[in-house]
Image (cartoon, rainbow, N blue to C red; front, side):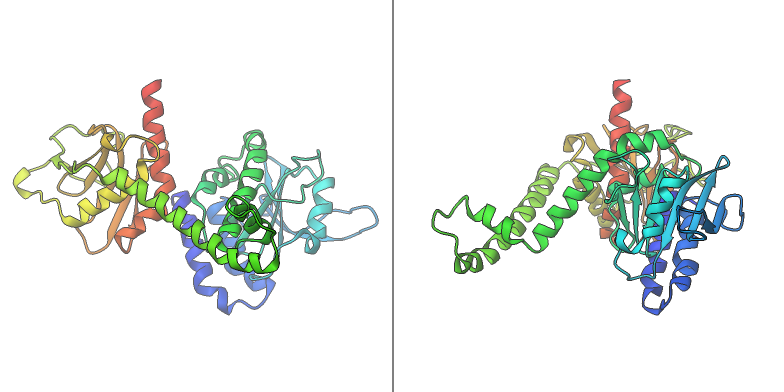
Length: 369
């Protein structure tokens, strides 16, 4: 099963079952163990890989246990402290994790309630776990930009040096993004004062704060909406929806053949639908953050409709499988393999924005090699 699909399945399970989970043990069984197994790639039934109730004596604290230790190459690499789903996460309620991090070989500490996963390292001081996570995953509000970094923490791809090299930037960029998101959702007094200071010269009393708070909130929302609209207008300004068919025998066997798809066209049988054109425009709006919109093209085949870079069949961005009751979007990985992911409506394409951008980046980087 593909990594992103596994994350999505666990997220769906959290959404469905969260209201019925009442204990920490139920949280472990329903959410945390499946995440360890399906997403991180460890065999939860193999005590040589996953050690539950891991014990290590820490100073005067004898016999304390941490919920899980994940072992790779014979060494403890990741420690996981669990809380009941819905419990706020803070290091104050995870003292064992903080202490164990200093006395084991583990370089990654995880604090989770099954929905939110906080990943820690020792960026600020060696062998001392940081007070703030370098990576945060909320399964009910997934930030697609964290998934490539989360993948580095899986057993097959685990590379502590690569993780350490990117952890500091991830930590601060992630924290700043979350802080900006909070300010945009509910501006703080400091943010309102900062923004109002650009347009108001008088004394900043409480009455002025009350006046400017809704104005700042409205201005921020309008600015963000304008940014989105400008990008969409740029992507869709030219009426360049020129649909061609994929030539017979033109498929790259490594990049463009999956599950026996027959892409050999009979032009008379190919009909590019309004939904496919709308899907193309969504993909184009996403991809134009990486390349000029004019480089993104659409070509149709019997079993799928392809969105391509430079109208080149060997440069596929995504495939759209819209000819059946269940719609799928086909995304490509670094090995040029296409995976079909189900979508219920066209707006479902947006949840794979990061994979689309990553594929465009790979294609443009390949041009420079």
